[in-house]
Structures are given as structure tokens and as C-alpha cells.
Length: 175
Image (cartoon, rainbow, N blue to C red; front, side, top):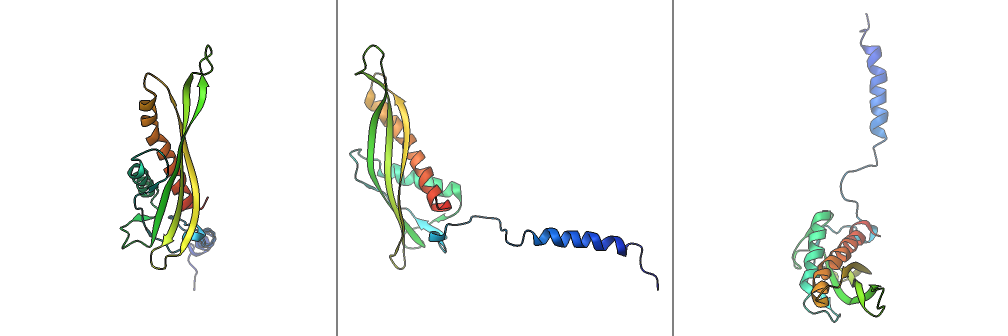
């Protein structure tokens, strides 16, 4: 009985293919959650509490965090009744610091840094257990033109966006 001439050339190819597939045995595609968020697939984000002196930014912060969670894709947004966990947050401070002044008059500030500080915790909905508690900051700079309040009003969404990106990074990556 003759062996096929093709059979000896298939064995090395098959061995190489088997070796390549074995190298990917522990790898999987998709989001990898941090240890403290194990088992959490859906998360609710109610309106943040505001402990700062800046009025009416609670909804802006919650909306920015929800948008970042959706862009990240690690967790799905759900209502408080249907979520695995609830993200409770507080706006702890909105601060303005001078960054640059005029050469002629050092008491006149031309550029400010606006910093938004948030603290957050993740609570399991079914048990009420606090899974994780952390804080983040987002900052941006703005120049003072004719109206300093208008410059600050326009800078707040940018600082909030940066804080939301950092918060979701902590949620989805663990750091």
C-alpha cells in the first residue's frame, strides 16, 4: 500500500498550526474588567450630587460620564432598577487658579486653570455593598477676555469631560 505523496507535507503544516493556536489559549477579545468590577455588566448613573459652589452642573457631569461609558463599551447603561451596579458621584469642588498674568501688571490674570473634582463609588444594587470608592479631577485652561464669567462657563464642560474620561478609565481598566 502506497502512502500519498501529500501526506508527509501536511504533518508539519498541521503541527505548526496547532502550535500557533495553542499560543492563543488564554487570550480573549473584548473588555477585560478590573477585579473589583467582576460580574458587573450593566451600570446605572444617577445625577451627581453637587457639593461645589458652581450651580447646575450635576446633569452635565452625569451626562458626560454616561457618554464616556457608552464610548468605552465595557459596561452597558441601565436604569437603577435593572443595573448590576450603581455609580454614585459627587462634585466636590470646582476651582479656578491663576496661570498667567500681564507683564505690566502681575495682579491682572490673563489665563486661569479650571479644575473639576469628583468623588465616586460603585454600589452593588442587589446587596448595597460598596465595591470601590475613588476620586478624579479634570482640568482645562481658559483666557480671560472681556467677560471672565463667560470664559469660565465655556471651560466647565471641557474640564468635566476630562474628569469623565478619567473616571471611566478607572472603572473599566482599574487604574
